[in-house]
Length: 107
Ligand SMILES: [Zn+2]
Image (cartoon, rainbow, N blue to C red; front, side):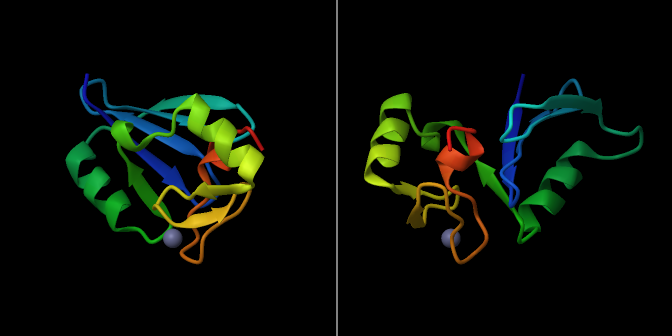
């Protein structure tokens, strides 16, 4: 399975399974919904469109913070936003990207 992940400005985490043509959306509050990409929609084009949006950030697994990092960020009160900016642990950067602890529903 090839999974492509995005985070939106509201902190929702999207996982696109390009083979199954499904999108799983996890809100920062833990609600999960899953839907199928409509027939006729090219998933690769959809990914390109999302990547071009100013309110969506593509995130890759190696850049996901570890549990340890998240704990440190929360105790420091400073964290990375999903675009790499330094922000308050429950904040949003000047580009609108949410902090990771917010996305992970920890704060
Ligand atoms: Zn930023």
